[in-house]
Length: 298
Image (tube, rainbow, N blue to C red; front, top):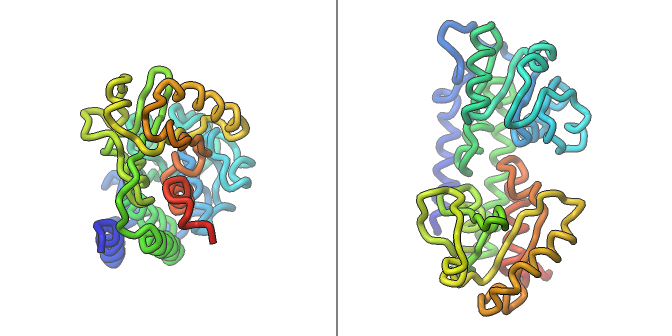
């Protein structure tokens, strides 16, 4: 049993006591009133939070999302309350929410504190790693009266990940260079959820330990990493073919790198691999198909 099976087992055990640890009042000041049993009007300030809400049956209760919340398709029709990085507090208040759900990075955390000070219920969750996704789903479910649906969503994701782990097995890991920016060149390091997805897909990050999560690297490091597969996430899904052509031209100068020599440079839809949410399995399976396509031929 590899370490990811153990991770999934641990998360399963955590869910058994999750409500006690992460009840509806988490993320609130102690002076705030208790959250209602069910929430009727919700503002979501991140695309992955929006996806979680839809998946646990709260799509109709969403009254505001950020501009980049476009999945499921119904999310794109919701009123907009600013961007992921710059939420508009006036638009949030105008939506008359019973709850605002934010992520824990500085801009959104500050907004959540301001909303609490003026009397709005606000829940802040962190979703930077796979284990935190399960934790966030549990907390959102508990805070919105949808604990059963949240548990079911977590169970579905876990089962799919277990099935994929059985499929990819413990074969030799494929060395993957994950590119987040080409000019200047910047890649995903090991302290990222992208690294977790690479490992769950049967790969190994070609970049060793780094100071930064997404470090810049030079030509020498590219050559030394000996990547067997290079993956870039597309910035816009409608322009993937053009981005793929540009990527092939860029990487052609590293002709002795195994990934280039064996024509294993890929540009994939960034939507499913850059949002740590309910489509986690789809993103990991997409990566696995590029690493070991023969496993998926049937």
